Length: 415
Image (cartoon, rainbow, N blue to C red; front, side):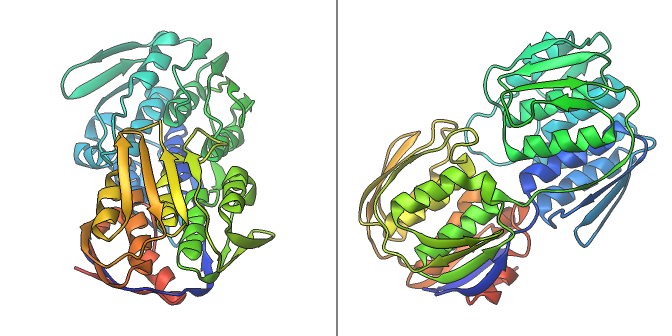
């Protein structure tokens, strides 16, 4: 599939933020911890959610996704029947390690797939399990974790890893006794998982800090839980409005999850007003900036790419630094093809000089966030932009073409 964009576009009206992709996947994984029914609302209709649902179904769970509601009943699951193909496509399938350890005390899975955005080893996850007494073996294709000897205790993670924190929470939710996780991630989707697990019967304190304590309950119950809004999608739409000098209202924004983001918008000169969970962006004159992607509450690594488009329209030299992953500037080469004045200094830093006019080109999606960023570039570029492999973008953004068309974008999807 490819997207055809005719720019430049001035957007107007209201565009809604949907449920969080990064929260949806651990919530779905948590449904495996109980044989009772779990109902999740505000779940986005995206390919990654579809892939996780397919994995749960391959395990034997009953899964339905109607509108924004996912209903899962995992009364009888069989880990040997799991869809290896689906795991190979989805990085988030790594959460099955913690979920199946919590359910069966044993898991054997291939390494997960997903975006190619730099080294993302799972040693932090496995080390956390080992600290609790698990036995880990691996070969070129499979990783096996035997949790039959796991006991509640103390875990010190090697880094602020979101998915490792989530995996430990999933594994410990049914583990008798109290486990304390130090160097835990504090992201909103970690908080959401803790809230869901608490609703299922686990005792958890400390979510939103870097020390989380969880007391497991061997028999967790079903729960109804509402997914949180996607702060990454909200930030993307706000930056899109600013780059295109549009007057656009973004609704359903989790404002409290984006405090530093809004501070940096202030520094750049982006004009906006906030009313409840609605953010109205106004045409602005943009100034150069320096930002660094950091663990929450810092600027999310998934938001640094759209800041690159802002930098092409800002006066002066801007620096973007992402110390977390070394493969996150692939979109910059595509922006250069479109006319951007940018230099990738090293795998973690890029300097972009602006303002420069962008021109439409044929470019690939690369990964979820880069693909969305190039949509953003196409919407402000002069002429026609074709974005190939656009199905990658659908892994993280539901109904993106329809939502953008509704606010005035000239964009269409073609098979």
